Length: 282
Ligand code: GLN
Image 1 (cartoon, rainbow, N blue to C red):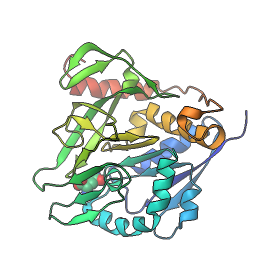
Image 2: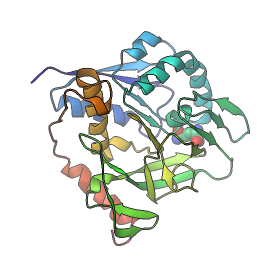
Image 3: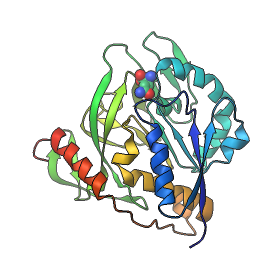
């Protein structure tokens, strides 16, 4: 088998890393290694430059409290153009909560203070300062997260509290934990990652959660998200391999990367146990 290697960029590991988000890096690294794909974890922070960021094949940024977000925001300004170019150029990334909020136009803190964000995605976040949105969360995603993105048909099999369950394939359901004051509103050229079937989601009004834009995924799922939802990790790894070794965008792949299927029975059982607790008659 060809020798693949992925440089995994971990954005601000010391400042943007709450509620276990570092676990996402561990999952990406292990699921590559189990397949013979070498990895190098590159910390991207105030001490690294744009060239080092550009050298990454896959990005992950965790969440943080408002204070850390203000500090990181100042440094991200220096990396904004590079990050924007990478996102537009289909470099896959997972941005969690505060990391997700940065991709929008601004973040209005509970104090009313407005922190300009990167303006890469058509969205914004406001923290009304009343209650935080905290608790377990489950969403139905409208694409099958596996080795390749394919539209799955929504079949009204069992009406969940907030929407339709996808056709059979439970890989369409993600479970996690959310804890955020910010409410994110999506604009036009961006899709929600999924529909809330339990919990609050991005703003507790639209019943949408997160966002997907090209190969960039933003979400409020802490936990961390990837151990509970290994299909999402594989989706990111496959996009990174395609981009680096096979295509300039997920739709123009010259070399279709098919990841060796791993035994995820424990993760799927854990997700089923969580869903049975959260959703009556699941
Ligand atoms: N500080 C932001 C908020 O409260 C993000 C929180 C987080 O990353 N968990 O919305």
